[in-house]
Image (cartoon, rainbow, N blue to C red; front, side, top):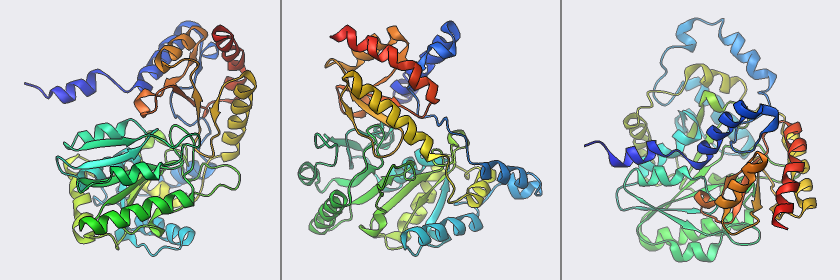
Length: 393
């Protein structure tokens, strides 16, 4: 017999990917400019010029320096450059030994969950959340417990968290700026969260680990800041990706920060390596490890995303839609015009509006709209959003 669990996962892709695939088919039928595809978090903003420059320069290097294997944790020089950048920006004291290069944030999260968890353990996350968390947690025989959001601000419900943490809780997964809401958790809320984890860890005599999912860290608007969680809680693992900040989702490059002050650091660090080994990650792409080192603090044009956000938020609000104001990332979380968000998204397809229903994000009744698209897509989609609203009126 084959693995029924893997069959189930492979025969039904994520709702995001299903809608994206439908969009490709529909664009072939109607024309790409007639379909308003807001499904996938695929950055439309080009990578900064420094990325192209780095690639071209690296291609002139001896092939064994850019195409051969690196050690499993990654190139030591690259890891050192990343550690120095984090130290400079967040007043930390990391070294190359605290950085493990990965194939993006998905790999980072999967590795951390596998390294920390055992069958029967519980991981907690907060709705709305990226649906793949469930796949990765359940893949090791653990359980994902989802805490509903604190409304209307979509911050963390600290009272619910305190009740949810038990001796079976191995870790808590947070994502800020959040996909899909665009909300950034405040320093006050994060201090409350880490305070609860410290208290519960002491009460149970075992550490509860905080896993922070950070691919959107640099994509924030105005004076919003994203607190760096290792400064607030020793037992924090940081999962980072350059997919969004450098517009390189297809190149699969990121890292895990494994602070030396973690409880059981001397066991967790090799467990991270062991989890990567079991999952088949021989090493992160070596060419793009080198690119990351050369572009470590560069970003794409964040102002372009801010412009898209404002255009979409203002336009939909004017039409009467209720939206969660995003402070970061590039998603707008919008209240569906009926209780069933899936039915609402199906109706939106009549106008070639491709939106993602929120059920798999653990927060029914909303839709996610990815605004990392061309500005003209937003402008041209507004009449379709208006027709959809008129249908419900």
